[in-house]
Length: 376
Ligand SMILES: [Zn+2]
Image 1 (cartoon, protein in one colour):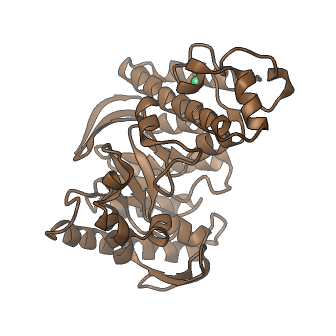
Image 2 (cartoon, rainbow, N blue to C red; image 1 turned 180 degrees about the vertical axis):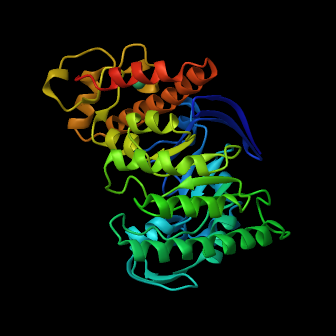
């Protein structure tokens, strides 16, 4: 159940109550594609860096180790030793971005695995079945994620099919949740808005899915190469048509600045690979701009990545040491940078929640954007 606690302009401060605990929103979900955050980050680490929701990937876990295996091992929570909420995406995005030789039909998509080339079929029912086996807290509806430059006609047809698929997802989820051997019979379902950069298609689709009384609503198909201006324009148009008394999730976004802007437009769930991916390359976020720890100027720098940061990297190690680890390709260097970056994102979300609570989100956003744009 979602509770809207406070609004500050369009910014929403909410609380999602689930069988795996309560999520304070706005929230940044930490991406662990194959049931682990890349960079050797354990679930014990997640507990130390303020992670509220872990996000895993349906397609990847279906291909390896197989969702049936995860079910036999008691579901994802038990498998990875994480008792807080988990969101699984539907596999739709990966089917359309990673898999090869796909064929889209009304019943679903035929494609080849990117690991071993074997043939796989995934439609709405299969995606729900896999996510039910994984037993995540929140399942995402199976949608087509068309290229953002697809023409109008293609986009309109694709969105219509995504709506039909959503109805099938909802029916299948209800059926699975009623079965006696389902690990999480309280699994929630979020629908996904599509329509590329066509405002009218997006809005009409948002109105359609809003009527379906789902547990939450996502905006998908953004952050796939369009400009930031297009992203904000679509959010301005679409979010007002999604139910305010439900979570609003912007998929795959984004930079700290993107998140600050989207919160201001009513979004309160986010996920993105940036903090972990950038961390693995020695790029770290701070309140004085981004830093590249490979830079020679940190060779003798004994300060932490960021003074005052409470993350496991900053509490114990210097820039000079982490730079050395990165240069020596020691896994610890990568790990420390990922931990710092996720802590930075999770802490920013905490600041965002406090600012909305205090009714001063706009002032906070302005100050934070100024800090983030500094050159370090
Ligand atoms: Zn830190």
